[in-house]
Length: 385
Image 1 (cartoon, one colour):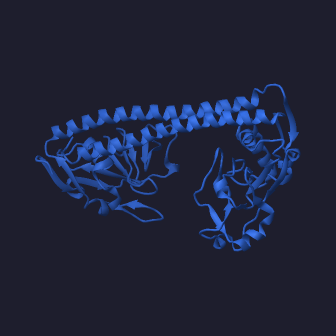
Image 2 (cartoon, rainbow, N blue to C red):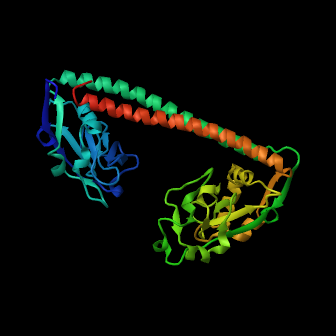
């Protein structure tokens, strides 16, 4: 540790306690003072139990260990742990940054189902800090300025990420709302050779294998792409029982039940041979009439997605569901010329590839900014800043 720094424990340097909790019924909608719970302001109250701002640590639930600073004249509830320096040797803002990166807070968290932090677990955690308050203030000033810059850079990167996605979505929508000549309207049953869904294999998930025939489920089917994570496999016997839902190359997959209803993609070649379960429908375009990629883009475009979701709401009484009959009767507008369909799909592929390239760049920037924050905090609390 650098000269001029001291190593201590939270218990030796800070007072820690959980204030009295008030119920939601006790709160007042237009109360004079904010009420701080586990994750910030949760209501208003006409009294306050802390006149000055306090450092708060969430001590229960999924966000256990996160940090907040209360406002002056606030009521702080027992779902937050107040951590207050016992004397003027540590500044509260320096202590805040300590909790954001200078303390391994995970050592104080117990409980798997319901994570929690107790004063007993917090007290032994070691902290290091400059003995001079002026040095603490200098470090806080550097971190404040750096983190403000990082926040601005992250906001710009996130906005650029949203813009890239919005540009693709806007163009996709325009393709299917600003149609040219030569488009016709027909029901899907007139343009396909198969529409149908599968079933759960005998034995359910216990029948799944580590390899074999792919069993495609709704969690694998996402707009614009197949997700390989948690792809299930079944043996030949189970696959034979689902011989009526053999997935073929260029099949369009559509989720037909639950929260993921109307998600859609074209099956990738490397998943085959495959079957689908009862939550996924195979839509097999007639190759002489309808291009699979074109159909996929059409079904995920905003106007058609809205129609599919509406169909799903009509199809299920307690949960969203789209039936085979509804898919068969679903009408689409498309260019009668197959080459034009392929040209539209190809242009959308190119735009999508560029969008994915931009998304990758912005996501890398966001990851780099997060790493920069970690690096700055590490330097700050090892005396290198």
